[in-house]
Length: 263
Length: 263
Image (cartoon, rainbow over all chains, first blue to last red):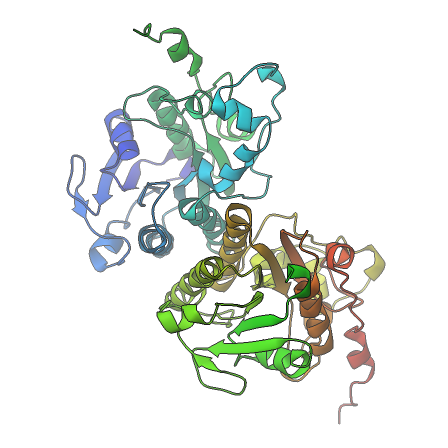
């Protein structure tokens, strides 16, 4: 079984929004095993990854890949929660994946690892929806080569996860793909001005994760932005396109045009 | 009191090797307050920063700067120690510094945040002491622009501390200088081939930290390598020279030439 054809896939944090979206669309093509700290649809194993107990570790045995979504997903999560549910839990996931010989970890990083770039122009204006005089074709794109600039404890924790993934990739031979996921909403559309730039539609999320699971084994470590092909996006998609064939098909603008009239 | 003339300085991890070296040389010019989890020379406040209790937090009040050396300093420290003594303790240091209005934090990062570059040439040969055919004047230097490549849980923790520092700098206005300290030995000389490249002599350590404490307030966030001006060094010193005036005076080669004859 090569990494390039992952079939057995452990999903941590399976009860969350992203886990739910993935479950409903990936279940036909992959043998998914859902793990979460809470019971929920699609959760087979209830275990607290922050504690790293035996039940959690056993879930990694025989898996070809892990999609690691387990975390406190609130951008405003306080430090004690980040320390426990994001830092400690993420360490335990990589340790368990290494112990079990899992070949690939897809780590749910976040755009908040580089969120403070949005204080600078033209990003500051784009996230306010103030497009006057801006040419969307000329936006300087943020890439994974830019240094991290986290905007929150949550974002610092995601930067930590990316560094952790690089260590496990280089030291232990895991293939690690970090996805800086944009905005994924329960109602699948942008909810404010910023999200016209940052939206990752459910369908594009599924496409991106499929590409990660099917990526060639030559992908050893990568950081990709998870975003739809939005007219006003400011994150680079070329490496994800080139290296794993991610081709987003949605553009948040379609929801702008279909917005109901006010009043 | 500007950042550029820090006088009252809290030193965390004061009982360790680096704390001891700094104490003996900085005590004349700065009003040092030593904090450590263990009693020891130069330790006024015994408190566990990983717990972040009131006694630890009170030590930050009225300080102009913090030199944060508190950590499990072993490159081989296991994850549970890194999580507690490096991640949690570092979060508590930055939180306490922010709460107390401390203007500058000098964070003891480490070369191990980028240690895996040493698997590549020419670094791999340099750290083995195999100089044949190498021109030390032509070594491509590692800079703080290179992505982190931690070599250990310890190194991942230091990468975390750097990201954390950037967040506190940008979000809360702290001036944060991260020092990727090279090799600082109790006996002030290189002990193996690698250390002819990586040595930071005691005298240069003191020079570097003095520069950090006296740096202009315009230095908001920086990552510098802490290394002597070793003939075989492969870390860039130009930003530290340009921005804070660090002028190392030692070169590890002097110990090679003075090595006693074997016999």
